[in-house]
Length: 206
Image (cartoon, rainbow, N blue to C red; front, side, top):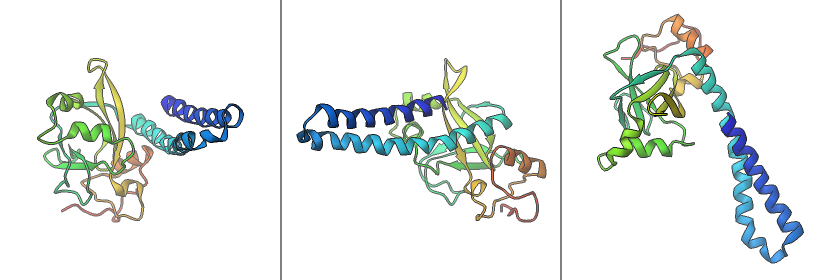
């Protein structure tokens, strides 16, 4: 949240400074030169606002689920066979059936480039892949979670990122059950998932 605030203030200050420089110190001939930078600062000021809801959601998730440090988490860039979503993914054990893997796909493009580079494929450098091994995880893959890379010599998480099932934040999509109990659903709701009460509305996963 602190970084979000710093980023927002920084881009606003940049835009104001460029505008002031153009209005007070520079001639109109500098407009074509500074206009692209002003447009970028204006755009980034608005996109920075989009980070705040996700920072709040991240905090709610971490209030409900403890961190786990996981080795050898399955990952990939192509479509996971167990998901209808396209994009980079991690697959985690189902809390109700540990032998079953549930994919969490990067549904948002915002800030995912860093992760995509390290999930990688056969051509990804081993030192890049090692930066997200082991993986820090807090959440329930049936609903939503926070992932992070190891920092401070593996003693703390860094580069936190929210992953979620689309149905966990969109009531129009019928969620899969994946063996979730009423208690699991209620905990997910406290973490910010917008799922209905545990009843027959949850679709059973084949």
